[in-house]
Image (cartoon, rainbow, N blue to C red; front, side):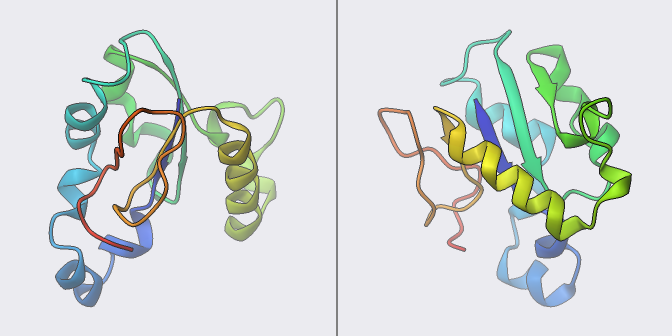
Length: 125
């Protein structure tokens, strides 16, 4: 299962915090778990495409229930320190495109591979 967790730029400024008042909580590990747990069995592999600045450790609480991977967790294949953030985003999008099940951040985005519309946030993009 692939998750697109858009946080970094959306919660970093007061203007965006006003526009997305619940996004920090909805995309926190606890918020993500509450959203996906009814739909994604424990033990499943999660690939998380994200712009979360603390990506190396931020999603660690999800590891209690899932096998969690991001681009920083495969340095033998791809060293994220060698790429611009925009290049990493393109790689994330390519992985999301190939994933059979995708849960996006925003309500206005398309869910893939589930019988119902599931998103991490109730906000529109």
